[in-house]
Length: 257
Image (spheres, rainbow, N blue to C red):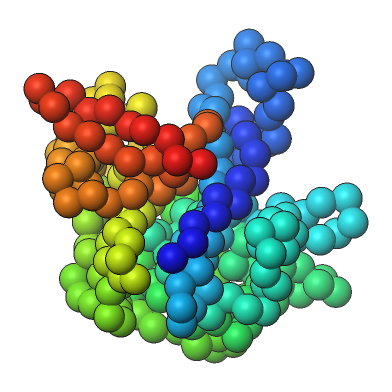
């Protein structure tokens, strides 16, 4: 198994929920009062049988009108057309924007040949357009155009890949555990989005159920530490891939990439 972090950069998010590129080296946080600052890291996993994308980033393009996500996949040594599975933790815009790409004024699937695995209730809620955290047009551009597997609860999608409903960050959020080819990997989406959240232990106001997310983070961290899982941190500023140790009720994260 090989792991690649497809970093899309840093952004500020204000009350309008618009994601504005932010360069920590040249931009000043004080110029963007009331903003939350985040970093975006989709992941690519190569196994003997699949090329797997974990969440899809914002879907921003470069100056050549090329999807950043596609270019980052090429930089990792693959073609976007080789992606066979797209596994989604949830469908908030910063995780789902890259599912589609605009061409000729229309939104088309970014990975038309890949199987998309999404929680059924999360998909149904996203299509209602009831929350500004979800961009309905993305899902309308995806609907009926890709092979989609809608899952519920907990289960094994295929040997070595397990999904679990978690419901902390969004009501129908899910996480993925991989145990295959002698490697163990955990992807917690926005319930374990950065190493610091394990170390600092806090309740996030932006979660659907902040207390549940805080409790789940501890569970994830202890399981990863005791069973040797490598963790993927979607919103890490740096060190998006790491191993966790737990001793004297304290977590330590050792970066791998």
